[in-house]
Length: 249
Image 1 (cartoon, one colour):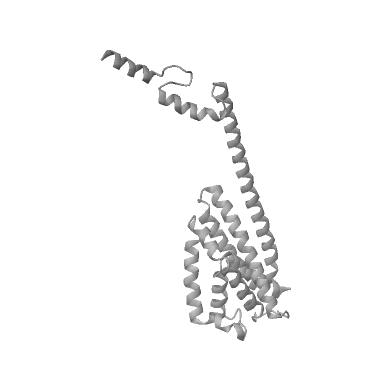
Image 2 (cartoon, rainbow, N blue to C red):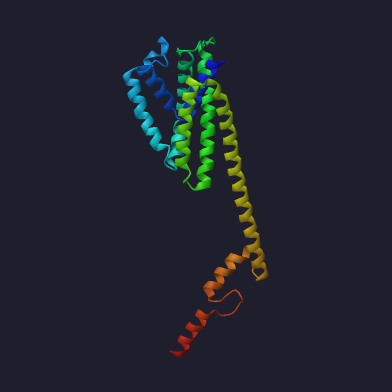
């Protein structure tokens, strides 16, 4: 149970940010005794992986906080985040964590599949909520949302290693939060569309009351403007001045 929560925590974090769990695993395995990777994943603690992971993490942290660019970044990382989630899931459930007796008895393909599925699910939820936040705030909510997601991804990695039982409540809270964000955004868009429809109805009713009916209203106004006459069928003040000047000359 605990070993499964460890894998779920790291793979969910990869769904939010592909390189935070990789950097955490690689750094802790290289410089501390908190976790010891299995021989099949010991290469994750090598210097090339650590340097590449930190560089990619820096790029990810910057791009994810720029409105508009974050959407493109989410699209590009659709295959990458599930792949990284599968990798960190398999690496974390087979690692040796001092003070625990975690044993992962499932086949390797199960680890990769569960990690990829959870990473993809979290990634899609992140993209949907980010789109709703951007539309509701005009892009101003993108940086705060990105900082919150980064902190959540780091917290999931810490919980996965220290208190694995907290991973499941956090995942449930993430699901509830995404549902609320998406539904509230949808309701706001529906309310705005309804207000626009009501405004158009009121405008059409006013045009009908003024003698300009339905689809003829706009073309009629244009013709009257070209002819120099107002909506009441009388000469406008500008037309009267022009006619006076021509007669006086």
